[in-house]
Length: 283
Image (cartoon, rainbow, N blue to C red; front, side, top):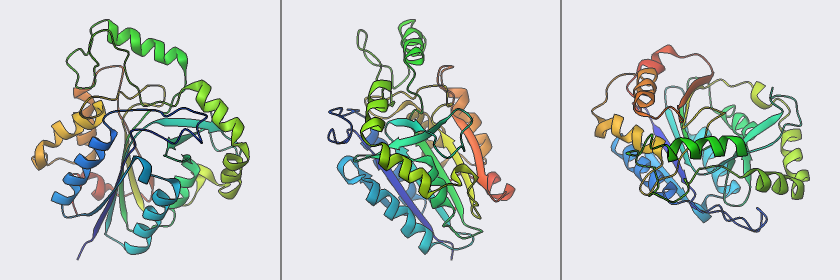
């Protein structure tokens, strides 16, 4: 019998002790995780949810590792993340732009090199789908551009648009916090990359579909109930009425999103065209 395991991470604030006094307060990330947990449970997964203080590096890595040990060929692992995205300098040469992307977990950042290494633990034939409602940009220029778009009135009906007069909440580790956090913890983050020298070149036997909330040069918006990406995904999903494959699912989400936030789709690991044509989250 095909097995499905899922992990849902939602982080509304982080530990200021690691991030230099910055708490990174958001509103909708825990709700995103709970809603995706409910979706997964309805599809027959065995779900786990990690919220804010529970979403430590140890707990996240441990949960993904446990799933890798439990799943075999044909099984499905679903991973969803809602929280801030960040970056650290690339010290192992696997990133053309010189920076590794991160998830801003409660107690420290999870570097994408670590995530690729975790995918490598899954057996060949395992299917993995990852949904990330976060930013991977620390650019002040992009923040200013984003605020200008929102203030123009475009997207005024979007679920993540804040009330008039309030700045938009974006799921982004600010550049000054990003740089100061790395400077204080350089040994930690450089050590991570030494531990995983292959980075994004890691060998992965599983088939992994990744859909992110925005392009690498864009920002993902937080909201009062859900993040903009998660809210749109759930609308397209329509309580399971959606029956096309993952690529069409992605395109359907993109068509409903504003121009300033366009979700990305890519695959890593073993090619699996049949997986991509299955209705999303099918065991």
